[in-house]
Length: 106
Image 1 (cartoon, helix red, strand yellow):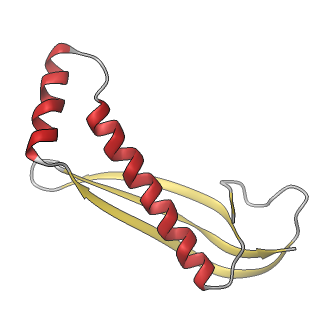
Image 2 (cartoon, one colour):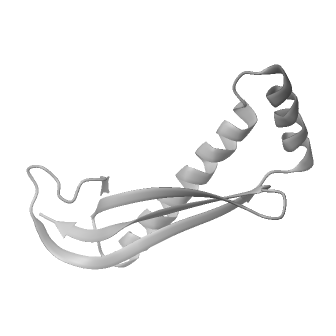
């Protein structure tokens, strides 16, 4: 499946629009990961713990969106957008939402 942030796919013709689809992932950061990230915050540098969590959440949201597009008979997604939000009392939850338009291309 072709997935792009652009409204069209160069060299391809969109023959049918199947609708807007989304994929969502809400990921909790457990105490150990949060503790280790806190140490990294004190000493400086990148937090691979949070980066890995964001990557997994983004990939999960994209996969869910592609699955839903496939269920509609689409073979491509255009206009894809990915959003990140922090949720929970202490900001310990990460929500990633991917959305786009499911289309059929020739």
